[in-house]
Image 1 (cartoon, rainbow, N blue to C red):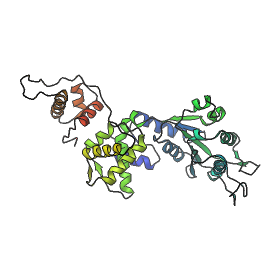
Image 2: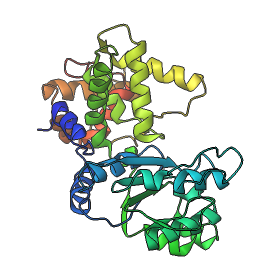
Image 3: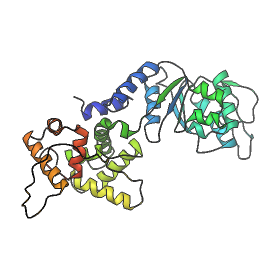
Image 4: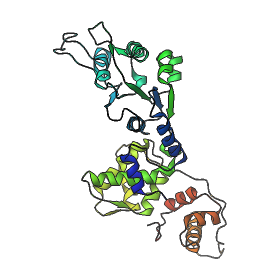
Length: 344
């Protein structure tokens, strides 16, 4: 059984954390392609760990002892970006009081990570294409090419094929970058990774000098049924706020709920609890002569509690008896605010 210790070890070894089928396949692909020098394109939503994949590829490559340089292609434009990537000669432009190597030469025999490559200007795309084709860079203000030995990994949250069709991205550069493709998945599509990721983040926070906090099983299960539109980055940010803000050693379901409401009220990107269609589970009979008429929610809550008690709070067994999936049961437990010995 996978533990938090296992996930922390994987992270220290430069591997992606998680237990979902997608994460397991991704770790195998990283190990398979890391030893080669082929260019890699990582695509997917923001916050899904694209830079982590790039660092993992570098950590398991033959270049691991050399530099890994990350460049945000959306941060600067024009001549400044050309200088950052390819370097410049002294006096090449106003303010260039001395020569600069640039990221490609600084990462010689290592790896360069071009984040948000879809934001790069077309003129710079042409220069980058030449570097990939000829393995030389020409500093700004210079004319002679300087050989470089760098593995290029690029990432984008855009559909680059659509950008090519729209004329905003060079087709030849796209094919040069897209030798090996790593598409990422949103956290909502790999919920099995939420619990191990949460454990790793809590361990990291403690190692960084923050309070050493744990979460109750109920709070952990609540994380599993949230939407996390900002993906892994949003989950980590949410947990850090919980660790810093919670006064108790155990972060409870009640505290997580209150923090969620506070964040939404402050205008943060909403984290929704995934809804579930009402189940067709058999419910306890209602006596028509009762003074207080039970609602369907009351009946469902009571039946879930009885089923959990019957199975000694074995959620998988309870879900089977109710005829629903385990995830659906967890959503209903959160919905009804059920706090039981193994869920509190």
